[in-house]
Image (cartoon, rainbow, N blue to C red; front, top):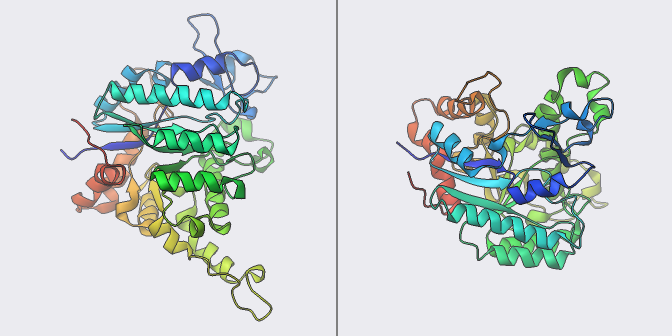
Length: 367
């Protein structure tokens, strides 16, 4: 059986949960008396004072932090190896003076978990983005020598103002030189006003189904418009959730750039030789397959090429709601999408499910 590699799979290691448990403002972890489950409140919209604290956010079971639960999940779904990453909101909220130490602590914990499970677990590290840039770069340089770290996971806020911030240049340069993949992942979504006054009637559907993908789309386009990929041509970026709407809207973006007067001089000539969006997509961008349908996956494949799409599960989010159900429907949907997108071309489906990640991240998975 061809290997299956999960590149979009999260954990909250115990050290991180301890930090959240010590807090009383978003993000925080509410731990009620047993047998009630702890509640994870990571979004301002989850912290409605009109809602009892025991009902805010989402319940957090051992699957969020237990490596045994992660390995059990992998075995159930025939996943050969996983590249684990800290889930949002990462360290965006941490005091700048504490961020470098906490980042090192969590990254070392991730590295240790992987070392205890060689060939089964690898990791994307997290950066102390609230710290001074020089200290962020120091952590990138340290991570380059970690045996099981294959990249970093990065939220869309960057240093606080977005991924088009010129102050990020030293970080991009360090990541490029270290050849570490950048996994861009959403957290902040869209302004709540976008969803209207009836959002609560549908829970997290609007923020997760639409807000997260649009956040990723905007973050990437801002990087592109800022010339990040022109300045750092060897940067490697993995966009979460199949790039949001990037595959569908890249052509529209290309047209808007081509017709934007701000990019032209008085004679109508382009002021700078910006790389085309399709060139960037084919050279710098990889997309995960966490899109749950062959329609979306086909768009991702068309946008970047079948060798640049990687399988993911988004575990431990989207668990089964039926009591006693072992297999996760969300995982089956992504596997089915990969198989159906390629029809009888099993080799290409296998590449998306595992082979592409093995080559990109230089993995040595063990069955």
